[in-house]
Amino acid sequence: MMTQIERYGDLAVFRVSARMLRANALSELQNALSEYDVGQRAALLDLSGVRTINFGGLAALAELHASRPQTGFFGARDGVADRLRRSELIESLRYFATKSAALTSPWGRRHRLAGRRAVLLAAGKGTRCRPLTLRYPKPMLPILGRPILHHQLDHLARFGVRDILTNPGYLGPQIHDYFGSGRGQNIRMTYLNEGAYRDGEWIDEPLGSASTLRRMQSALSCFDAPFFVFCGDALVDPDLAALMDAHQASGAEITIAAREVAECDVSKYGIIAATPCGTVTGFQEKPDPAEARSRLANIGVYVMSPGVLNAIGPAAGQDIARDLIPAVMAQGGKICVWSAGFDWRDIGTPLDFFRENIAALRAVPPGQTAFVGPGAARLTLIGKRRNFHGPIWVGEGVDIAPGAHITGPVVIGANTTIPARSSIRASVILPGTAIETGAIHCDQIISNDWSISGIYPAVPATEETALTTAQGPRTAPAPQDIAVTPALLRAG
Image (cartoon, rainbow, N blue to C red):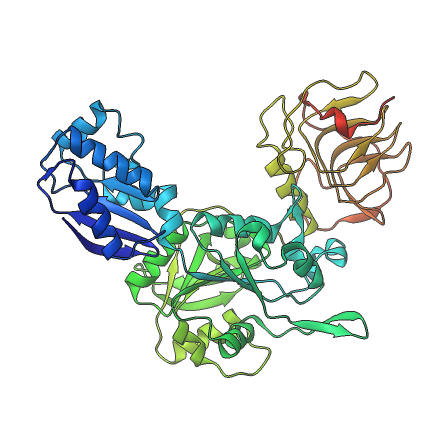
């Protein structure tokens, strides 16, 4: 009745061999799936061999899907597909025209990489992002209320990657406290710390990105199949299934995800030289644009085969780009580059942090706020004595007094207090900030201890910023009205 032909992660593909599907097909299909120990994993059934299907067969497929919700179907011949369509089952059965359509669907991608591991590198100090990183480790910088690491984990989970290793170092306890075991995000978090408590104080002990991977393998033997590596300080959304497919098809030891950058920006990044078929031939670290051999920037996302870590020794201080990759190439290992289209937002400076919060905020539909805290509804109506013009994002526990003026784009972090007669315009307020009565903030990142001014609306020619206390209004785009949750506002 059925033959298993392929497997992708926990998604098994079967070919249905029966020429006609009748009511008795249900028990035969269920027995076949049990024989292959599909269990709670996903199954994708190829119906291309089925020539006819009667009402009993239609009922069998419907019952199979009801009893095994993680079952999909594809490839039915025209007559069978038409029968499914006329019976209105085609929508409820998770049916796809082709196997490719099934594998690239959100459902297929979620299962194809199940069981894979990912390393999120999170130990660095992020000195270019100071003063933000005096308060947060860079991977914990909040973008609309969620740390960068949380956004990365959300993206990995869309592809079924839920087994995560990370290396908290600088301000590492913030990562421990936020994610814990990972159960709250439906993931498993494993920590190999690059730091420890000394006399009650956390002291970071940086190891180096490649040395970290080598230590993980030595201590845990955790890499027995190709795995992902992410630098934990950027917003990035590559098609991980396509990236893994490219890695395995090429036979590479390491595949590097890359983005083409503008010629004027090549001096900011590590640049990759590669053949037309994607084999890496060399690297240039922040070259002059006139000397750059390409415009492909290494974005800090990799797929690595487990044996690659044997190319380096156990010493500390080894880096992926500087030490591991050259060592693999020197030993004749193949390194490939993958540069399919995807979004990449490097959070390298306070300007980048501000820009990405504002960019995310502008995705909010006109006339609405973003969600106010997890699961909060978009509500309507604000008091007459409060002046709000969007877009505005409001975190949990925010206290906004009557008489406050807020003109978007503005991001207000959790547990912030905004008193009467204060004015906020085109700014990002960090969580826990208490704005002073009568303060005027415009074009700023604001905390209790400092603010960074002059970064909106235009991107300056240089990345220099000024620390200041308050600043008068500047010209900003025309605002749009929004709705604000009344529960966040004090009566007045």
